[in-house]
Amino acid sequence: MIPSAAFDTGKLLAKHFHGCDSTIQGRDHGLARLVAHLQSIGRWGSSDDPLYLAQQALLENPKDRRAQSTVMHWEFTGSWGALGCPSVRVESDWASQVCCSTIPAELWDVILPPWDSFILDVPPELGLRIWINRRSEPMSYVKVGRRLGSVRSALTGDLVDGWFISPGAPNGDEPGSMLLIRSDQLFAGIECDENVPRECFRSLQLVGPLIGAICMAFANGDRRRVGSLKKKSRHRRGGLYPTNQEYVVGKPVQIDLSGRVCDYISHGGKTGSKLQIQGVVRGHWKNQPCGVGRSDRKFIHIEPYWRGPEDAPIAVRPHVLKEGGRA
Image (cartoon, rainbow, N blue to C red; front, side):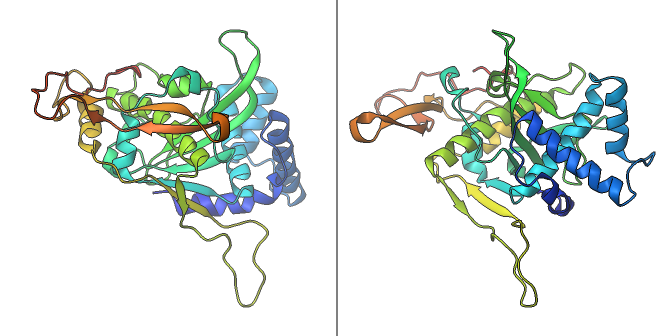
């Protein structure tokens, strides 16, 4: 569940980031507007203001990662508010399948988010965990964004488009840093500090496939809107920015793998109970040609399915998740 305070803060910051694009320069422009506003009302320069302290730290050391992360959190919240605070809720059985599905490398660079900033409402049935303040907490939501020209290519060293994510707990607590990573790092399996408990590491590995599946579902139009565009009052006109755009993603599936995902989070791929389905082909994604002359493309998710004649003995290995983003 997404904390209500996030929506309140997003709406307050929205006007400063309205019209700013997702480039580094665009986000910095929105941040400069916010700082100018705080200065004009005399609220800039406080020794306990996290944004002010982060800006001062960056003046002394532009490579200060903690300060960079603090600034990115403010940029995210402002741009998210300007977009109407979009959020995505996923059906747990569908989410369990896509967490267990692979995203081919040829799709990593063509997957685009429905908005440059949105929040994913994580189904509690998946049992995902996050390491916060030296404690393992349930992962309740994930802030997801994309910023143009913000990370270095592993092949050429050039600046390429990057993804940033920040998971959070039900009470709104988040890790001290927001991850800024490349597409291949997101969809192949996010790495984290070796001191993080394995259940939290395994949870982070599944976030990438879940985010990728949501983006592809939006590209296909496989979502429904459940939130209102604006909250109107009889006595005053609606605000400039939508209060919330909430969408639900997912479709009926034949196999619910939520229990297997929970087992994997708790025990990993080599211990604990195995997936209690034999002869199942692993779920995967395809970029299927379609349309007139097969000139268009559509993301297709192939559900896990039984292979072989129904009356034949099943001698295929169980469907098992493995650490490291591979199966």
